[in-house]
Image (cartoon, rainbow, N blue to C red):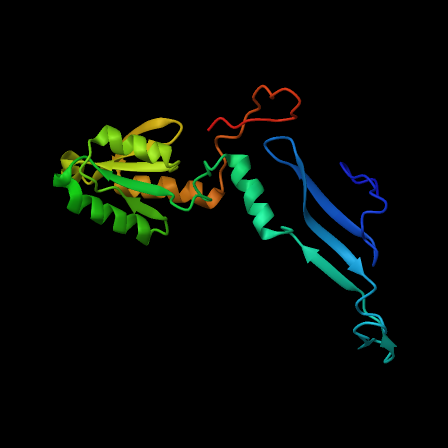
Length: 213
């Protein structure tokens, strides 16, 4: 069919019919066969399941089975995905998308209210209410690879605002809670990957790549 990027792989264990494999390179340059679509003339046969259907001509016909595994092995797919992003997932993919960080205990109640609003907007939200300095809590969120942080203090509570902080871009400034929610929901809905992996110098003898995270 002259499809771009495709090449024949004779003898690749497809003993019951032709198949298409989807092979990707991970962040280290290794090849993985993930998705596959293949025809199976074996299982429907009379020697196996003996499958039949009545066609438009009112006669019996033998069906052809299609094996469809878009992600291949789920465990292998997730492993490749984690390695690709080095654990630093984009907002829409991260298990914890946003972490609310109160400046001090004085803002604990407001932080809880902000967390509830974010969760009501469909965002997976955590809260760091530890009795630590603000800088330490921000650093913890960075090390935990949380995509977005929402910092709130007494002034924010009085004005109904929050300070949004991006894991990579840093402080995005103060804005209304509604504006912050809208921004997060928009990025989440667009499935944006704003910070793409960029290649680094490969180790000797390795086809590797790297990730800016």
